Image 1 (cartoon, rainbow, N blue to C red):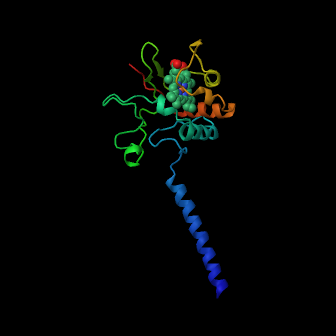
Image 2: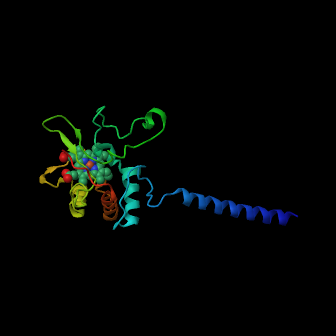
Image 3: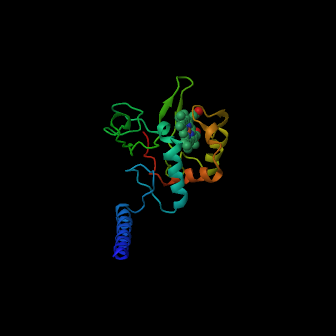
Length: 186
Ligand code: HEC
């Protein structure tokens, strides 16, 4: 009796587990990359998926790049990364505005020393922030402005990011490469 019961329980457990994994697969749309905000449509063609996934994790789970590299909202003017009704500090629900994600333009400091966190989305040529991989790694490692090496990048915590491995910086870059192309700015 007991062993029959045990066998049945095991069988039910296996069916349950299979059911769970099947429904998890069914619920996961193709091309979903963990930690990538919903609504940000990645272009995974000719991208290294494993690097994109690691990059998404580094950018969205710890790097916090969007908090500064977000495109500010026009009306009402806001640097918040959240869409209307999706501010987790207010009601716990989080909706990152996909249209402004890493779009660039947020300003820091006061004129004349004001600096702008530029877009990290790719340009028409596919280069994130108009930077090659080599230039990107150099900025993150040295804090040197790619347009003028005599200038040191302000505000951004590159002294922390410089400790990332080449592999991890490459992964971030690959994730940025997969983001929607920056819309032409007026
Ligand atoms: C605290 C705000 C802040 C955070 C967080 C931040 N950045 Fe920045 N970043 C800036 C600002 C401001 C600039 C421009 C600084 C300047 O011009 O002196 C910048 C510049 C850059 C540049 C140089 C772009 C160029 O062409 O000049 C890159 C690349 C960059 N950031 C990547 C990143 C990445 C990747 C992350 C996340 C891992 C990140 N940033 C997080 C504020 C930030």
